Length: 302
Image 1 (cartoon, rainbow, N blue to C red):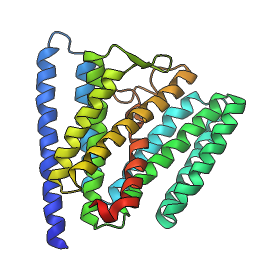
Image 2 (image 1 turned 180 degrees about the vertical axis):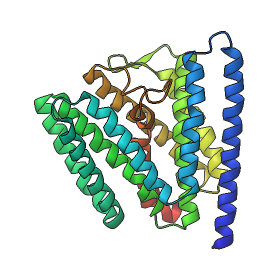
Image 3 (image 1 turned 45 degrees about the horizontal axis):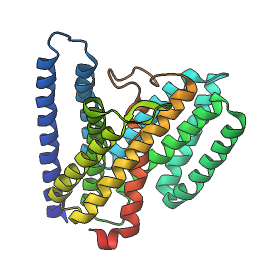
Image 4 (image 1 turned 120 degrees about the horizontal axis):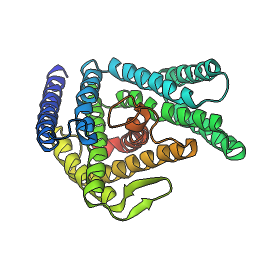
């Protein structure tokens, strides 16, 4: 077991080094292209990944405790963003969110399957309540519940009935594919996008952007999944398709929340990207998707 873990960890560090090299090359290319406009949005977006990548890398380095630390960081930043739009006693809203977060984390560690049953019921009830009241406060709570539900699966991925080194590899796969799918959809949409998908919700979402994300996700999934020896090629292709569409759905879902709140971004925390919820909206959907696929098919999946 010890030697197997060393091999998988070694391959992850190689893959991570490649990602940093690609980011470095992209940074140099963007710096050259935007040398006449040092405050361009494209430069800000690329440079911001030098903040995002190290944070995610650290969460992997201190696996499995890094997952908990990452969830706490994202959740606290999410509360900070959402409370800005709360109408009424803000300390009460923060307290409710913290209690919900504590409940979800406790259930995830001690009764993990209950999260998949209880939290969807709470989300459905909150969605029904919001549909009746149409109040921003109810939407904010709904968005936080969705965030807690999706992020809890980062921990559940570490508890899969698989070797610990394989769970770590799947977690790295999830972070990488979700991030590169987002980037591919954005770049493809900017360069090739003409046909909008949901103009009223997110005018920048196009069919060309979605297609570009799917193609790049398949290439990344096959390359990375094969390198880490995670699954067969057909399953890696299927996973790429599911996660790419799931990431798109998560982005669209949280964009709908922004439209209701009449805001462009949840905050300006990450230059060029918006807030933490603007950055992790895809992950909130892709994490439970990946977990469910692996959990229910792991006997023939690995």
